Length: 106
Image (tube, rainbow, N blue to C red):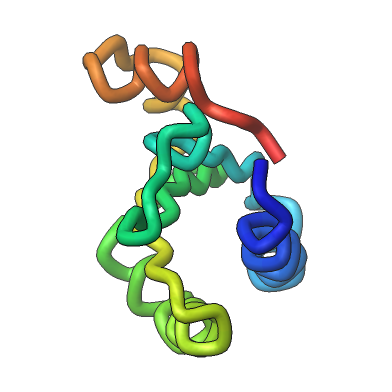
């Protein structure tokens, strides 16, 4: 994993741990960055797993200011996907199979 990706993900993880405390379960990098296939135009795809309940839209709003500042500072786009732990563990969609197979848990 490239250093500049870690320079974004480590502060993001620290923020999520502070913001969600015991509800924060894990942060998973997935997609081209995790596979080592990223180009200069690639975004950073992350799955944020929280304890139930999770309202993904509300969580995007809640974290948008911090993530926007991080993106502007590093000139990279972070695409967030929020999910409840129960759904992450139970669902077997192609996306989640891919994340479980290729994702990097931070």
